[in-house]
Every structure is written in C-alpha cells, then in structure tokens.
Length: 66
Image (tube, rainbow, N blue to C red; front, side, top):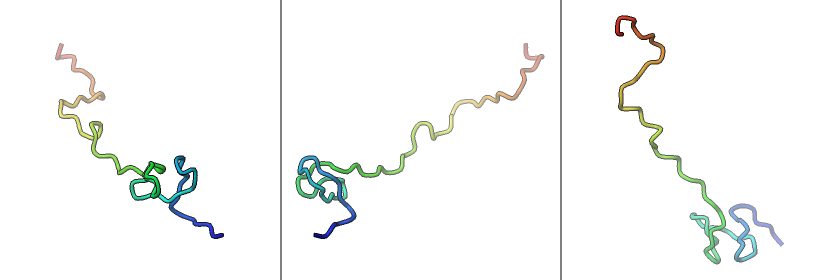
C-alpha cells in the first residue's frame, strides 16, 4: 500500500483523507475541507493618508496668539 503525500485533507463528510481542488473543496463530495490562503489585503481605510490638516504635536503654541 502506497502513501500519498501532498494535497489532501480530512473530509468530515467522506470521513476519509481526500484531495481538494483549487478552491479547497473535496474532489469527491464537494465539501469545503481546506481554507485556502487569502489574497494579500487590499488598500483599506487605514492605508490612506489623511486628507485633513496635519497637526504637529511638537510645536509649542505662540504666546502672541492668545
């Protein structure tokens, strides 16, 4: 008996170790058995620079302003 090493996961529907397709589904019954690696995250809200005024915390307020 030969042991296959590679692209297989345990399918809880088939109750056996099965190969999965490119979407992570069992090739026999179609149940999702492998969560595939997600694509890199796209630019989200936190990746954009602020469009508002930039405030610098290092500056001391001028005494003449008040």
